[in-house]
Image 1 (tube, rainbow, N blue to C red):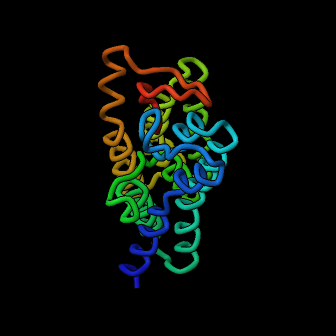
Image 2 (cartoon, rainbow, N blue to C red; image 1 turned 90 degrees about the vertical axis):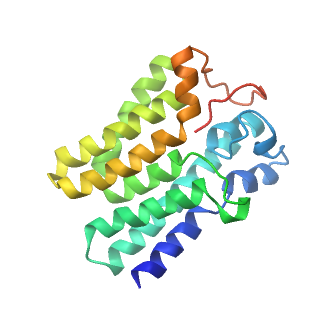
Image 3 (cartoon, rainbow, N blue to C red; image 1 turned 30 degrees about the vertical axis):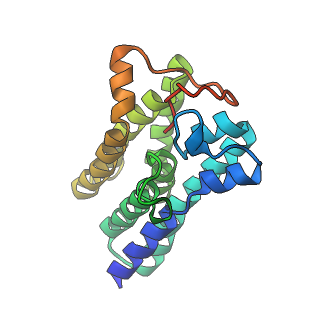
Length: 204
């Protein structure tokens, strides 16, 4: 039963909402513009802020829903986090996109929000503060993801769940390895909605 639900979580995460939203707004396929990413940032760059916001909400939901359903079906709190990881993997390696995909930030946000809303809000504050200072989405996403295991442990004292959360955070950071290289070189660009800059590589 658990294996079946993990598969469902993976499939939930694999729905490429960024591409579907871009089509809805009659905008270019986000894979062909900007960073080539299907996440909300690049959709906003390709189709505007409204399309980006809709993509963000849908990507959050596809991470949140499997965790919320699992909470009602399984008593093991750690399994909720594994379901969340499955959804994130689905987003990053979607079978509908030949096992390509996004970087997992919005889907991860939905997972974290469903697992522990207080920890999520603290991580969101890290994102907002970093973005307010830098206007760089990738840096904000990385620092927010890295803070999440700390908030989980601080609020719950559950080391096992904090370690599993660290695994998710580490994976999200890994998906930003190209962004990290640009950050180190001082080449990562600030986010500007609706700007089709084919050299911009800032999408989560």
